[in-house]
Length: 413
Image (cartoon, rainbow, N blue to C red; front, side, top):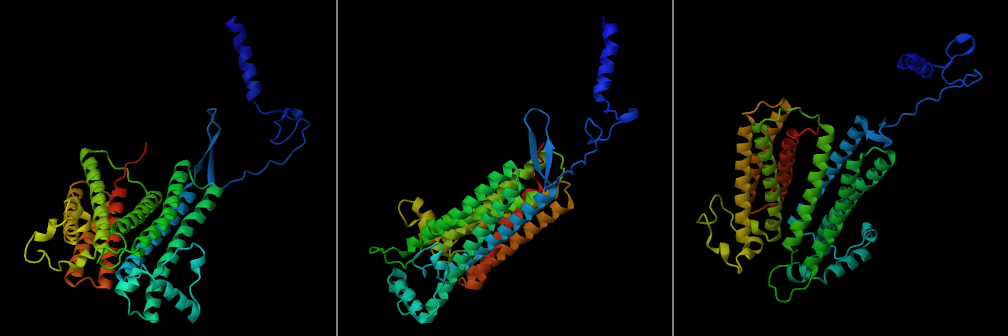
């Protein structure tokens, strides 16, 4: 019975797989109908997304093309640069004590600056009602007020530009289908973080506008809110830069050895230490702790100053005692440069690609440059240009740590 059925089954399969025949037994051209009428084949419509059909019952799955990934990577690289600019501009605003010059917050209304003498005087009168003018700047002129007002205005407007640079292209790329499922989640998180950053900035400013009858200190924003504002900006910067590097830089197929695993862990720990050191700088700036002990390597005449634990409870000294805040920042800075040095020598013991070695050398050079900038800023009593350069150096150092860490990233299987 099987011998009888097998030839018929083979013939049936050949008839189904063979192309349809036209008149005279010739194969019928594709696109023709049952009457032999030729119909033009519709051209395939290609988009920037490569359509990959999976015949597994789950339907078609769209995967972003390499060209789309490069566009998204460059966009996020530009955004990370704009965030870095906002952080630097915010540091200069803090150093020039300009952050409390705009005493209200409106998303759209405040985008138009005063244009005549009457409007400037009205703005100045609003500023005169708050503690910074009454205690610190009671003899300020209108021309001096215009300078600090424009500093804060520039910082706020730049923040709005950064927000638009994230949200508008994200909506466009989403609609075009240039974002994978995982990238959509990242982009939503980045857009949410940049929006939260603006609200957190105003929450920080409000702390410096409040009346504090029991305080004899000069008006300033809360160092806790300042650290939160800087920390969220650094998170936004790191996430954007890491994603852009992952999309733009070709992956290295490194052998998964125990030495590489150890180096990868050390690189991640060092990057976290650099981030923590940069964040501690917010407490230094918020408390003007850079003006407490302007000597190095000792703090005054001793290695450990006597007023390190003057506040009670003891934990309060870590965040509110200017002496302890500067001491912590020094220790974190020295620990960071030591860790980077060790990381560099560990990387030399492993055969790494040329680009990865370049990242290690760059990170080491940035670390020692930052140390020189920090010591110079301290010894010269925190001049604004040098202090701003030191803050920019912290971003450069963090970028170098992320670059080196990205070079060692594990390739997904």
